[in-house]
Amino acid sequence: MAADTSALSPINPANIPHSEREEKAAWLVRKLMGTLAGRITLASFESIRSSGLSIICLSPWGDAVPLMLPCIRLRDVAVHAAITATGGTAAFASPFFGSFSDVVVGSLGESIMVQVGTVVAWDLGHKAATDLLFDKATKLIPDQAKFLTTTSVKELTVTIHYKHHTLTDALLGFFRASSVVHPDPSLFATVGEYLSTQKGWFAPYLQSSARRPVIPRNFSPDVIFSHGPFIKGDYALGLRLRDEAATLLNLASTTTPPTFTEPNQEGKEAGPVVYPRKMLMTVVGLAPHRFGMWTSSARPEESVIKYQLLNGCPALVVPVLPGAPLVAWHTSTLEALHAYKTELDKAGNVKPGSIKFQNLVDAIFEFLSLCVDFNRVQLPALSSKGVAPKKSDATLDPTQACLREAVALVLEGAIRSGLPDSLKVLKEDVDLSRAGIAFWRII
Image 1 (spheres, rainbow, N blue to C red):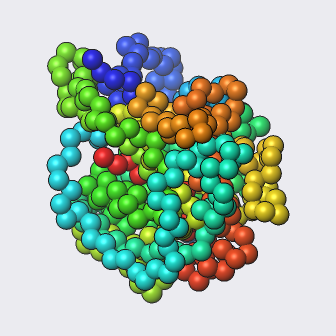
Image 2: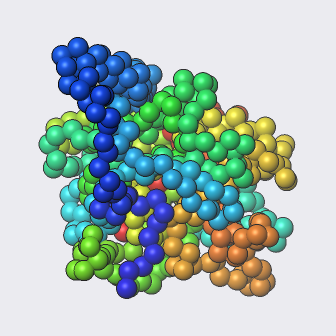
């Protein structure tokens, strides 16, 4: 029996019903349009209409260089909605694709090569940190602020190998949080959002591996996600970033869940076996390989990018449903997240009842709630004092509340990296306009 799938999974065109009614135009219209003058008039009209419907996109590297694509691209996504864990209705656009990509993957082998730069004072002595999810009032961690304060940056130069030779479009989807977060939950952008390029900060990751990201300017998503094309290096990089994190919040069960078989399009025969996966959420910065030029990161059959991790930003691992995105990123850059410093008190902690911070948390929490397999979430064990994880919202069950608290900790670490002492460390190594929160599906 097939397991539940993520609401963000690709849409199978075979499952979309088609009308069998034949459309007919009036006899006079058909005769007029059949004449030479009618054909010229119709061709001129269609040319003007197509020009007006062309999509202005960010460049494949995510900068302000304009890129115009024909309106045919509008056929590649379908906008729909889903109820999220917060009770709101989120809008998102999913790509069309035949089946899941989270099927069996053999050995990752030499899919990536990693070079670690010099790191000073990286280890905070708190690698496994699920106890950070306990209520702060219990004082289980006397100096919790220590683990959310960035004092060092680790840089990994990673070479990802791939074998597809031609440039293909990435299978992108776009997620916009519900009215619980936004007064206007429309997926389409305002004028200010239209001109902004920050939603393309992660685009070089895809473009450098010959997967062109087509990001329309008139979309205003909270999270952009991709379902492929798949390369093994995505999994290998996600696992390496998880292992290199200074602090890890692991909500994924260590037991191996059963696999299930995906039915084929007609539901008559068994499709490929789909294996349960996990997802990594982490704060990461990107930098080009050489000379400050992104084109130096795109080599034949190789992607070479410098990835920067902050030791004051925890990484989060959660179990996900089949069909969850391969990679994704929050559209706010680290520079934009630093603007939330006003929501911190003098001690650097989030002010109680901060609406702006809660909305930021809810946006990512709603996205994850459509991906996470809550039946496989491993809650932190009770402490020796018998203290249970904090339940941050009365409308959420303990598992959802624990996930939301974990998201809040990751975001708090990202915001605190904008405090003066941490900002001095970042400005030496990190381009804040090319850093933010990213997600990798991992095995």
